[in-house]
Image (cartoon, rainbow, N blue to C red; front, side, top):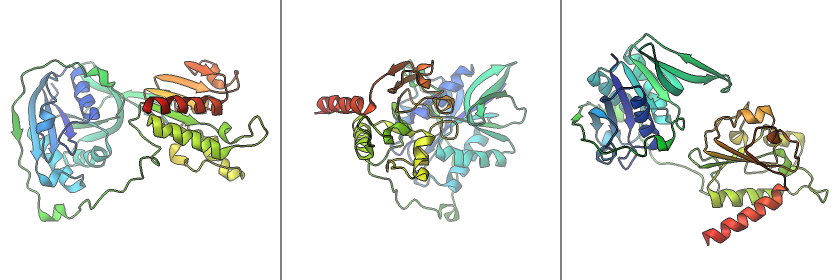
Length: 346
């Protein structure tokens, strides 16, 4: 019988992020009622109020001001203490940057193993079986391990929010506080501040409902025989600002600078989606001026609703890759969409 620990770092306000709640739901799908929940943070009271109906049998927490900020030394000490206190053989956590930086090292301290980017868990032959993608998420592998403890980092976004939104109320479990001694040497690293681009310049939003992908057609010659790159960038940024969508790009668009063509200044290789780029998991996606061939559609395989705008009715999106294809001029369509969004927001 596995002893299951779901480990979560609470948010600055003490609440649990959707990715942490998704990890708890995954524990329930393994048929493990009464699993142990481990919480780490400065305060955990708001998180405890979110737990009704999740079947948590025991809660172990590490709290204190020294655990408020992400720091390897203190996070690793807290996670190790919770793992030893729970005597867990299977440890599940959301694969956030904070957890991914710490938990593989914790697995080494516990003489266990760690696997990252897990997309789903199941039970086969009475033993947990995990699935993850390899080779730019083109090959899916299912495997098991005998070594324990086994630390699993779940890829955020693989469990729909609706899977745990209707949890029923239940009796809250008891909370046990685990004392962790943190020396001054472990607290030498401190977060002095945070630097982030202004909201209007932030184009990559992993939690956005919509992924907007721009193709190389935005920089090509239009009906009047001239490219309109400045207008294209205005339309795209205006839509992103109003819709709060995340911006993606085809490889051909981010590479046109090397061909001596005009480029969109808001794009970089960080925005690239596809076989040689990222594979996001937004609920909806809208492709514009992109032909939708196989390398690009690889990056869309986890998008649940796909739509595309292209003047070519025979483009790749029309051959079974898009749920809806608008055969139209993307410049005209996005101008109209921005106008409608402006009216609604005013």
